[in-house]
Length: 274
Ligand SMILES: [Mg+2]
Image (cartoon, rainbow, N blue to C red; front, side, top):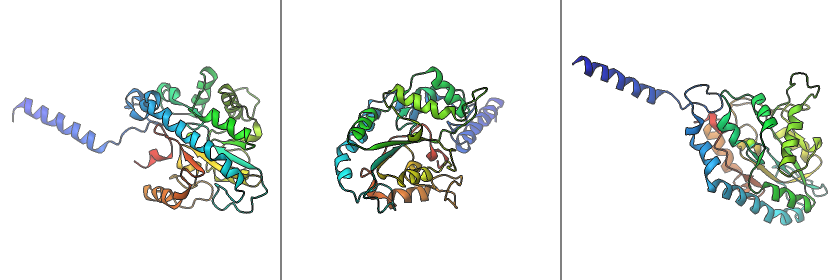
């Protein structure tokens, strides 16, 4: 083997090993080897007309279903919620990629992700509404439905700000800027009260006083608990790809029928199961 052949063999072999063994960089934690401008998930949300068509489709389907769910007082979109006939109707929406799109942040921020970077970005940039949500929220409220927002953005003290949860007021301001007015009572963050990142406790909190007629989110965790490897709330076993797929089957009757899921190709619990 000539010296040139030997060098080529080593180079080609190392390329193969790198391709075969290195997992794709995680877009949330990668600090190198990841280029958001090459990430098809991000590019699709940013550029595809289909993305807006899909989110409009979900919200318009939900709007058309509002009168039926309001009238049928035996209906709840919360598995296990019973005896809610006399409670006022409510819907629960996730925030990121459900009400506001973070695509510009995802394309721009310097990896790795921190909540502070997200917070700072929206002090300087306008929020982008997910297509269809503003119209849906207006229609729901007009029909007498209360609207709650459940987000896993955490409360974190910031510098000299005396506000114990500036992120909560950041979310309220973002929603206001896209035409959705709301308040402290209707926005629930991950670590308020005794809640945690499993959103089930916050959904249950709403369900104590309201009949929950619809859920909206871009992550399986916006609908069912125990979808992550980390254990939160009532979870005793880490999720697996198979357990997550099983949730979709177990609750098959809810999809498009009280549960409305939106595309989330940029981040989320699914990224741990590739
Ligand atoms: Mg989300």
